[in-house]
Image (cartoon, rainbow, N blue to C red; front, top):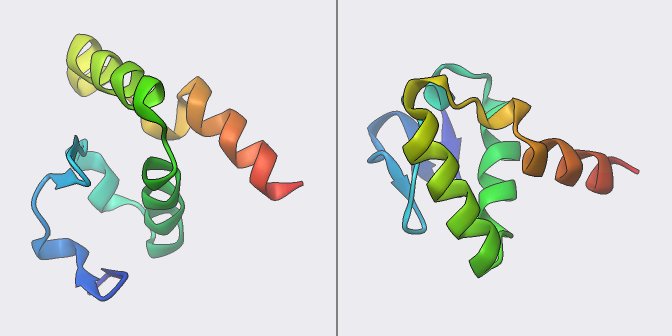
Length: 79
């Protein structure tokens, strides 16, 4: 069972802080899920809009861990 901030991710709805979450996110490791949710949590309003547009336009083809925003953020927090 995977948890994020004491919320059972497996029973969590497909939204997080008002953002839709692609269903494949719940297949990732707990560590990667935490990273994704940390990324989504820090998005500003413009980034949230861009994320939502990308998700809506790309649908099931959208892969958050390959998105420009996530990759840039991951590099920034890793260094």
